Length: 347
Ligand SMILES: NC(=O)c1ccc[n+]([C@@H]2O[C@H](COP(=O)([O-])OP(=O)(O)OC[C@H]3O[C@@H](n4cnc5c(N)ncnc54)[C@H](OP(=O)(O)O)[C@@H]3O)[C@@H](O)[C@H]2O)c1
Image 1 (cartoon, protein in one colour):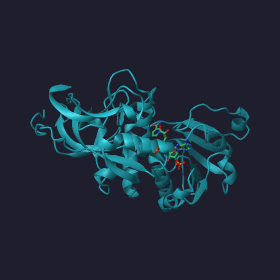
Image 2 (tube, helix red, strand yellow):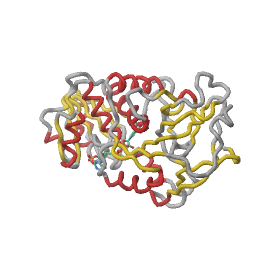
Image 3 (tube, rainbow, N blue to C red):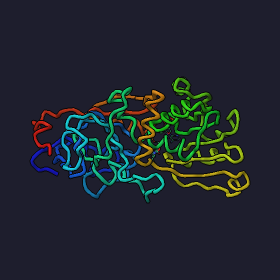
């Protein structure tokens, strides 16, 4: 961190939850030799941030945020292909280079390391990519974590093919809306499960062929069994998700928005030969595959709201309430505090 230059950041300290968030001036990070310093333009909100600040109280101030689009403000000495001023999208998953070599817990920006809800963030140079040409910076800022997770869940793990019937819970959230768009682009039959009848029209417009309202026992309302269920709601949806499958079907879990603990009869798995797999984020090759897929199919993340970072606490409270359809994206601008020009300390 540079004591010489400061930046504005959304810092979490003290009280757990959104009440502990403050905009503060903090030292600006510096790029290491294999890193780039990114001046953040827009940063997408994920439920991950809500979990982190809800659990965070006393191990020092934390800057959360996994996703961002920004411009390169400085490069390390070994990052020759990148130029100051390039606009880039950040892959929030750090250090996962080989898809088959699954890390114990994938490292995420804004988890153990400083996140993107700040004017500047440093990331390994291998974690930045050009923004897909069909997307605005705001849309691209909503893509990284959700797109990577949805892509791996549907395709690497779920083996989704055209004509499959996929059921998606949590489908109206950030990751869920991208999963719906990607599944629809594959010509799968897509059933969305939501708690809100008010979200039916948006889900249908996004590509859902069927919408089921209500989580508890949703399997009984399906028009036919699922080949694949993508679940991120957790304990509230999982019992029904297992029953929703055809014999030999697959269920892929990447989240526990409600709670993580379930009771499951193994007979439900072995008699019906169900495959149950977990997944979390994805590798660098999968990030590139996801960007190519999104570009090829002109998929746009669903942006629920664009807000200044100063409204982050309210945005996180709104996320907890579950009214949103898609992603909130924060815009991150100058603070009025004099900052050196981006090129002044490049290299
Ligand atoms: N492992 C990973 O790498 C990874 C990556 C991304 C996300 N995740 C996890 O996936 C989940 C979704 O993340 P997100 O960022 O997409 O969150 P989000 O935008 O808040 O979406 C969550 C969705 O789940 C549903 N939901 C929320 N609270 C619920 C409740 N109490 N009961 C039933 N349904 C509820 C809502 O749909 P309705 O309002 O339509 O019911 C909501 O749209 C989170 O648990 C997150 O931690 C994991």
